[in-house]
Image (tube, rainbow, N blue to C red):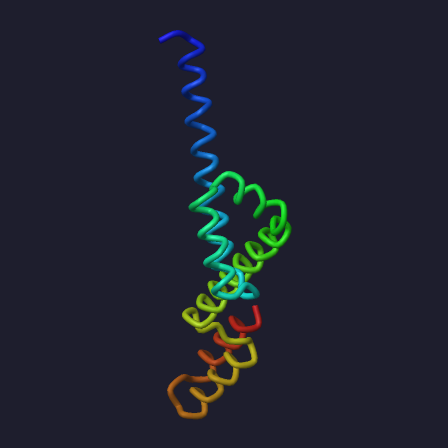
Length: 125
């Protein structure tokens, strides 16, 4: 193989891989969009299968701006859900809640005054 044949093969492989990535992004965006009905989703998928290059280009031109908005919305939602999960699992309490819990332990006689003072100082720190 000559240099240009190798270069051409690498270029074609890169463009095909880029097209596949774009196609997966488009299909994910089609199913992510809540405003499209099932019929329109089926129509877009049909045209992506029948005329893949032209329909992908048309989709990017017509609905490209919304793709980034929907992707950012999904990423934001996933981040909020992750943060909520961490908060729930960690069981973080406010300093007032920690002091109140320590006061209840002191009143119940589980801890003494010195331990209560340490817990209060730790909650306020």
